[in-house]
Picture 1 (cartoon, rainbow, N blue to C red):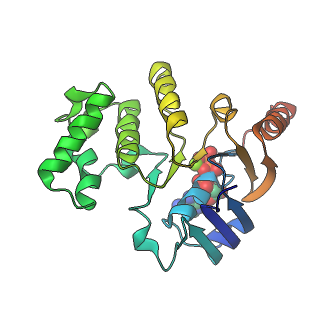
Picture 2: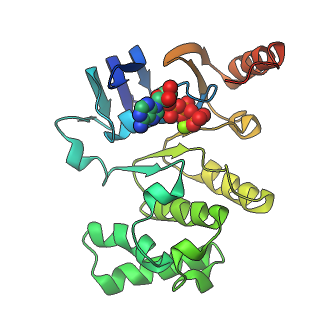
Length: 235
Ligand SMILES: Nc1ncnc2c1ncn2[C@@H]1O[C@H](COP(=O)(O)OP(=O)(O)OP(=O)(O)O)[C@@H](O)[C@H]1O
Ligand SMILES: [Mg+2]
């Protein structure tokens, strides 16, 4: 097993008075880690903590060897993050600028960055999107732009918060194939249990605690059974 790319050491996290993660310790070294759990169970919060977008109230988070508090500024160049809501991710008016931005951040000239953006869009058969206004795109199209911009930068670790939520079936299948082939480790929150079935490890969160942790054949089966046992509960 390789060195852990994420370590939580006695991590707690609150929004004001509301405790979201009471006390979490874990080490993740697997290539594909899935996060499941009901709405509000803490999946997005955990991913935000991994990236340093949220800071723990107590304890420490170490991501790709960096302390997310003291080394916070170094994390974006090493770790890609796909937000659950594309509107929180997108900064620029056009698709080309949005994808080029990350390359400029990494020191490429504007021209080189635009060339990269063009090349990545054509790789996904979306060359005609270069000049498109991002906010004219549909939800699924925006999500695709965000996914392309994360993958294009080839970070050391990729965090995906429900990347497939708005994608149509064909795009979802194409992306699932792409993600499966990526060499980097991924941590992905998802309600798509079929996709997670091929992962190495699944964490099932409830109330910010780990309810189950293990291979998909055990954890997904238990999660599915628990959900079916309480079909009337809307959380
Ligand atoms: N900005 C916020 N301010 C206060 N509380 C928040 C905020 N964002 C999330 N929470 C609370 O934190 C808890 C965990 O939320 P989180 O978004 O991590 O859940 P989740 O598992 O990602 O849910 P979902 O499946 O709906 O995406 C919830 O109880 C939620 O109400
Ligand atoms: Mg979420």
